Figure 1 (cartoon, rainbow, N blue to C red):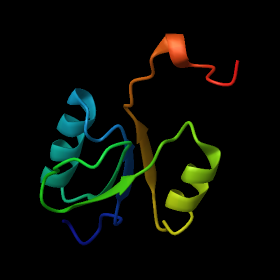
Figure 2: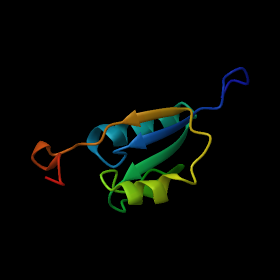
Figure 3: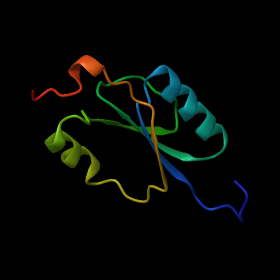
Length: 89
């Protein structure tokens, strides 16, 4: 990383999906620090920290995300099933 560049930390929601996985690989190639979010425990590229969280669950989200700090960019590449968008009715 160029010393004149700011240290960049990306939070990638949907990091285990097709688009998110490619985004993670691209960010890592450009020396970004990457934190991935996924509902399920999955394998991931070396150099990425994964957080398992259901973003549709407010309590789970608060628990999982409360300890994260230093994030400079957020990328949302998660897929949402429109039929289940409003799970509470």
